[in-house]
Image (cartoon, rainbow, N blue to C red; front, side, top):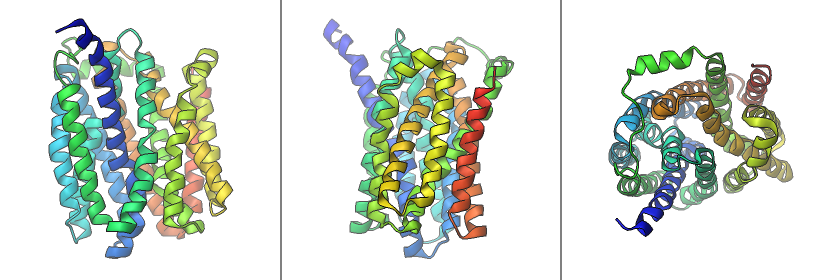
Length: 391
């Protein structure tokens, strides 16, 4: 291999990781909030029932993430990306054919759960860190900058496609993009010589037990659970809440998509608050801003307020998602990045499943998004307080 090729490989691999992140989060995380209303209108399935499908996706992502992390440490990313690009995409395609809610829920949750477990940040962040061992924090920030384009690409695109060709064909396009991105990443990123496993041979139980002895790690896992519940509830219900407040689906999905661009405001200058405040205090600031963003959804029928929501939510969530990887990297043994990032994702998946389920219950009980928004804001405030007063 020539020196020029060797020098280019990390950049090409990081680019492929960024593209995979955009597709994984775009197709299997952001777009579903846009799909709920048209799916319910077309099929008669309840909004609450469709909301619990998203909870199932996040739960499977968390459970699968723990297993994926162990595979990542031992064998690298290639096997994970191949499975997501084939079986994950196939299940999403299968979901587009269903006429029964239970069958749709099973296929969609399986497909997007696999994509999430094998391709969300708990896989791509440690992979990026290992590709740039001299500057892991910078690699993670760059990866999340690319990931910021998931929402602005997929949210307005999903809104446009749903109105143009219907939700079933939109899901088929999602499946195609998942297959293309993950299979390409398997070729570029997952090659053993480009992404060598870094873990020393150790039992998973021992590694997790050693990490659990740290009070900082235990607090961080609790905060991760709460952040996940708040974030996933807000992102799932942001478009329906804006529609209920008076915006059209196209306007609401476009504003929600702009949230992704606003994430750059939370990531590009991140080195400055990190240097001045440190990771933990910067996370506190991010959570307080996210709580304020959630509260603005109450008046999101007003276009300027909706735009303000998008800016505040994008900036705060953009910073939080990057800081989660950086803070985890600071707390844990770098030899076991995959397993411990996977463990964090398992906790995140549980929180992500609880949040939308609680939101769905609040919506079904009150028939209003106000309770959902209040719960979300309170959760962000709680996680900020836990971080602020932790030692």
